[in-house]
Length: 391
Image (cartoon, rainbow, N blue to C red; front, top):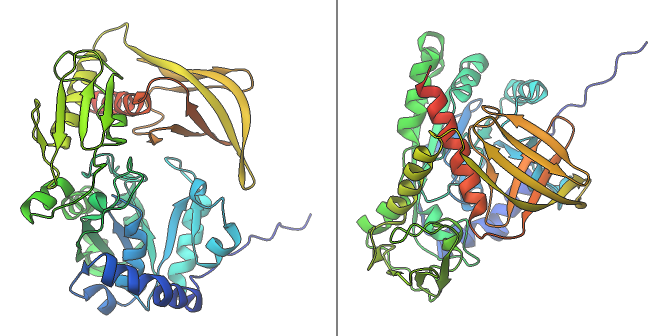
């Protein structure tokens, strides 16, 4: 029986990327966003792995502009490739299911590096929730150690406030990029996985709301809070969940009437917390306490959809429940259970939870509580933290 031929990945097209950089990249990153960097990434010759923080989609274009003309092959979730797959693959994007191990992807990365090209990875694996880092697992450091090429880190500041994940509009502001040769080819041979992981965490540390405040970046927008109530779902005054509403630059609790205003420098006025990050971290603390109880549960109804080709196909109603044992989906056509520890974080936005299985990629559309997807994510992250601490 003949061996099945393994299709090789497509190298990033310098022609297409030069065209994209000239037509879209240069005007966008010099006029609308003033991307400030020291030009050092252009001086580093491939092959290397570049890891970057992922606080907004502008970091993809920003990384492309920083690396020109040595454009990297980007690794991206297959959920981001459904609209124009042929074009995206020809730009050199390597597809991956989020939060899963893919040995074929490692083979593809090795092939790209063997051609003296670079590969770009966003180890947070999803967009930042509140402009601070999402969990980064040691697996990325193990991969760097395995590949035996230099590691470059790029940390963007300002990307989140440019376009927060929950916002429907972009807010144009300066962005900066910190580029560091984190691990040399010689160091790869001697450094431990733990040390490499530590350097990645240190170099990709950021807080975009603090960056905005420190640099007094004023965002003049009449709708600063609209959508933010999907992230800040719990009232600090009365404790009610999923009762926060947004009106322009103000958040209000529908239960007790407490209000908070976000100012043009990103700060919160008139409430219990001065920053979005403080409010969000308090929600984490609340869930951390909840999961210590045996009867902990967060659950709600959703509409299941499965990715088929370029489109998501409706799979009917379902119910998602997370307790201290598992994250389970039960529905008309989708029934799947993930034992505790399968995920350390979730891919989500205000409307969807995204859950990959070995055979399919599902997304689950929120039907009821605005903010429920955020609580599911916090519960998974807090369970992962508790499990790690108990080892």
